[in-house]
Structures are given as C-alpha cells and as structure tokens.
Image (tube, rainbow, N blue to C red; front, side, top):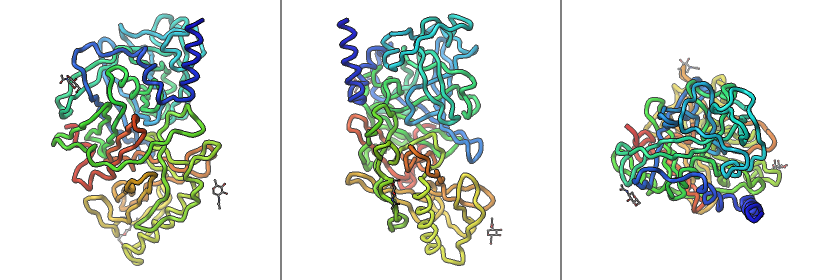
Length: 446
Ligand SMILES: *[C@@H]1O[C@H](CO)[C@@H](O)[C@H](O)[C@H]1NC(C)=O
Ligand SMILES: *[C@@H]1O[C@H](CO)[C@@H](O)[C@H](O)[C@H]1NC(C)=O
Ligand SMILES: *[C@@H]1O[C@H](CO)[C@@H](O)[C@H](O)[C@H]1NC(C)=O
C-alpha cells in the first residue's frame, strides 16, 4: 500500500515534470556498466541510407544480445521508445521479458498485460508480459509488443577522438519487441527504430542512467552515404580526428517543451521569422508558435528527409526565394523547370554556380528565440540535386494538416550541421553549416 501510494505520487510528478524526474526513475532499471571504465562520452556512428529521393534514413549500428550481433536501427530524433523485431532470428541468452507491474513496465505507464499464445518462452512471446504501444512514423504503422531487456554494447571515449573508443555495455537496455510487418518503410536490413526523444526509454535517458552521464547529446548527420556521421551521448569534448571540438563555437536557442502535450518526446525550437537573403518572408506569425490545440511551432526531425512547411509558409518562402534568386543570377539566367517530387520549385542548374557552401543561391536564415545568431541555411542544405541539370529547393509543401507543426526541420537541412541537445539547460546549440569551417560531419569517424 505504502509502495502504491508513493508510486502514484511519483506518477503524478512524472506527468507534471517529465524531464526533471525521468532520469532518476530510469536509474531503477538500467544499471551501470560491468566494466570499471567510467566513460563520460559515448558515441554511435550514423550511416545515411538513400533508396530514392523519397527514402532517406539515418541508420544507427549497435551490438546487442549474447553473443553480441550487429543490429541496425533507423534513427528517430524525437522518438519515444526503441523497438526491434523479435522474430526467429532473435537468439540471446540475456533476453528477458518485462513482466506486468514490473518497474520497467511502470516506466512506460502501460497497463496492458498479455499471455502470449504462440511459441511460448521465445523472444517476443512470453507469459504475463507488459505490452507497450509505439509508432513507426516512417511507415505510418503502430508497433505493439512485449517490453523486454537485453545487453547493448556501444563505444565510449574520454576526452579523446572516437578511433580510441572502448566498448562498454548497458546490460538492461529496454525496448519493445515488434513484428516484421511493422518494419514497413524502413531501409533494408534495418530491424527497428531508436528514439532520442524525451522519454525515459529514449536512448539518451537509458545511457545517462547507466553511466551517470551529463544530460547532453550531440547529433552530426553526414551528407555522404559512404562516410558516417555520429551521435554523442554525455559531455564533450566531441573531437574530430583533427582534435577540433565543434561544441566550443555554437549559437544557442531554447528547446521548447510542448505546452499542451506533456508526454511529447519531440524537440521543438522557436522560429520567430524566416529571412531569404536579408529580407524577411512575410508570414502569418501565429503559425510559428504552438497553438492551444497543439498544432504549429517548429519541430526538429530525422524522420522527414526534407524540411516540411505548412502550405502558407511554403508558398511565402518559395515566392521570396524565387525573387531573390532571380535578382541574384539575373532574369535571363533564372530558369524554372518542371518540378520533381516531392519538391515544388526546381531550376535549371546550368545557370547556378557552386562554391564551398554548395550551390550559390540566396541564403535562408531561421531567426530563433533567444539572443542567438540565426540558423543559416546555405546552398548545400537549401538545394537538392535531382540529376539532369535540375536543382530543387529542398523544402516540401506539407499542406494544411491539422495538429501538425508548421515547420518540421528535416534531414537534408540538418546534414553537416553540428547540433548539441543540452537537456540539462534545455537549449539547443547549433553550428549552421560546418562547410563554413571547412569541416563536415564525416570528420569524426574514419
Ligand atoms: C574518464 O573520465 C571520467 C570523468 O572525467 C573519470 O572519472 C574516469 O576516471 C576517466 N576514465 C579513464 C579510463 O580515463
Ligand atoms: C493565421 O494563422 C492562424 C492559425 O492557423 C489562423 O487562425 C488565422 O486565421 C491566420 N490569419 C490570417 C490573417 O491568415
Ligand atoms: C538547362 O539549360 C541548358 C543550357 O541552356 C540546356 O541545354 C538544358 O536543356 C536545360 N535543362 C533543362 C532541364 O531545362
């Protein structure tokens, strides 16, 4: 009884203060590494996988299970729960289902219990287990299955470059056991999704708890499909091979906690205006803040391959971009060509120059909350080369879908930008294009 009421009390607090409380609860179930090496930074390589202009995913590799096997999972920056398919190929002596009412189950607030009717006592099919629902946002399918734990091994560094990384393990890594059909839309070879969202089962909070890391993580997505980018967990320095630490020279803007959905695991920032060249785009600014119904505002996402804009914002941005481009390259050289999906504004690239920041086009600036410098979007992040001498503005018209953010900053605009999610101070550090510093996100891993 005493246990019950203190649990309810905790639950009450969790709902009120999800970010402050979750790491200490997660600690109850995720114990520390077995090794005596106490890392302060962990890292995971991230591979960009492209199947077509539409399918572009950032994939993380970890070693999991006993014996360890490499597992690929698609990265979902704001995703809530990690999940994996637990089919016949799942073999591990350290797999354990989470039972109904267990501490691990309570972390998910699931009240669904199940006795599996299939091949019992196999990964994904056990008696009296905690069933958790999550979502594959790429294939738009719900994922439901038993909550489980197993070993995950990743690499750690201590004030050094990543090539000196040492393996450390998280012995009780929690995830949801999905089904093969729920892999819809994911790149081939991928076994599930890992979230970096604000959730007590997100990778950041599970790793912070296991090693008492600083509540920060950094994401640097490579634009190359052959050189990997990286995600760091914990405190810096986050050294490139040349011992440069990008976290030293960042601009900061507050991370916004969703005002109406306290359970949102997503990362929002406040865009106050958009400039093209140096001219402000004329926008309905009420779209830029989060409304009472939860719509609007600006989310950062690795699930969207390109930034998605509310239709009204999209039209205004394209209009302003075109007049700036026309003025910049000259009327006679401005040649709009047939649009190539999913883009709506494409140009003959024979008339657009190229320099170290990519195609030479008017720069786009996101003016953000706080006193920060704007987030600069230069040619390489603004334009997409769709082949046959055609360059498209790399933004997508998101229509006027209700309950959606007005701006979802997607993968193409994040590539070769260093982003530091400082959760302890609730702020986002951003570098804008590393090309301005003659660097890329592939400079960490060789
Ligand atoms: C790594 O850094 C942590 C924190 O600074 C320190 O306590 C630990 O001793 C270091 N470990 C090694 C092996 O250098
Ligand atoms: C601005 O956007 C809000 C939110 O979508 C809408 O309610 C309002 O009518 C718009 N105002 C104008 C002038 O278009
Ligand atoms: C682009 O311009 C070049 C040079 O005028 C021309 O040869 C080419 O056909 C044009 N391409 C498209 C897609 O319009």
